[in-house]
Image (cartoon, rainbow, N blue to C red):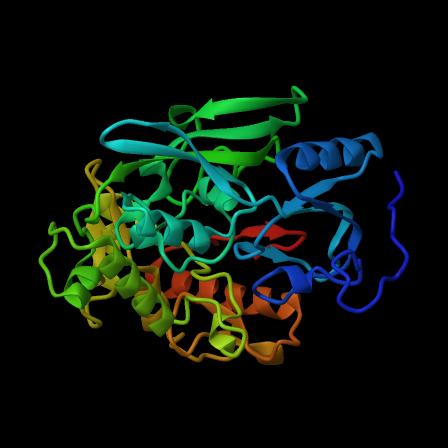
Length: 363
């Protein structure tokens, strides 16, 4: 198998194979063997099939907001998803189902649903990336996650070599994961969301958001208020992309909140007895979700903690690892992530797991 490299392109040309850093919010990533741009679902399928015919590995990349690519890059074909738009495919008096192209910028979609009085995505405002990435990670924030509104995902099945429709019940949604995250078998093409016709949000579930809105948990608020407040909260944590703010040059939360068996959580509480009560959320099955940000901070890695080459924990949020210098290597970021993971393990006996997809790198 041989790699196919395009000739060097002019500056600013999106097909320039020099580096994948320009396509990730971390501004990290080495060269691609070949870059292909797909403007619609049919082109996505075609580009993947052509790469497979060349016996090349394939990486499908859209917003690049939840991926960490190694310094060696990706030697196969990178398909840049640039499909856009959404359409109503079903509706009744109470709900509307929208089919969204995989490359549609996520926050643009959320803004459009809020403007139209469609409730269900408002608390996911300000999240970078594309709509097609949301089922992969089961994206969630401030008490909402996409598994609650996704009806189905249309994907290209690389094993069967055909486009399939996967019902939400078959997507294997779990906390920050799905069947799409743990296998490269499927390439997401479109996502169907069923939203509620309402000018009010769903019940506010997240205490921090309720406080910011000046309401009680369980109350409903105007959609526009929910969206504006979520964006303000996220911006205050460096979680809304800003080209002028190095704190946003990240993948958002780098580690997931660990979900622990009850007895393990009690051990963590004992080890943290001198630090106060760790923020936690009991689950119906006896497990307990614990704040990764708290564990990281109490293990000695506070906001602004610096690693090599200008990588650092965000000065606004402990969960975000940033390429503050804009010139760091992926190896440097991975070294910082590994230091944090090992420090938390040593202090609390809990192993943190990365939330983004790691390509040709590992912690």
